[in-house]
Image (tube, rainbow, N blue to C red; front, top):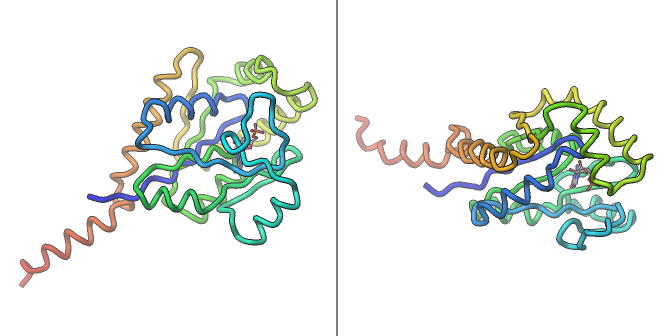
Length: 211
Ligand code: 5GP
């Protein structure tokens, strides 16, 4: 049964550990998944590589991508634009590869509206205190940005209701978290709404028996 890949959105509060979990998922199941590389107007962090972590573009270049309908979705997040290039996603889903979008909530909800069959997963630490600690211990943002990101997390909490699954990323249990994600995504492939081609083929094949 040839299947389309599952368009999977993984969101989570800043500091939830999305990057680490997604990286581990790719390492563990390299043939099943690929990660969409977003475009952003944010400056690269010290350890980030252009084209691997993000496509770093100017505001003008980003606005041109919007105008030319090159983005599946885009959103503004704490002073910068972020968006998902469309071509890569469509090509890989058609090859049967699951495409992961690691994006924030506004973008996730736009994706669900446009592609109701997309799977929305929200990754979170077990409680607010752990979230704050992780964000501070990461050491990649200054205090003002950390405060902005925590504020944003507080505003976003209510939108967890719009996701299909909430997955906990608990300290020291990353493999459990990755395996749980993998199971959820694989199961999705067998949902009836993702099997219309198979159902049609079966129904066509059985038509001869209906008198
Ligand atoms: P960061 O600056 O920490 O890399 O990302 C900030 C937020 O933007 C994160 O929540 C991240 O998931 C989100 N993000 C990254 N790429 C995209 C994208 O293409 N679209 C949207 N809507 N959000 C994105």
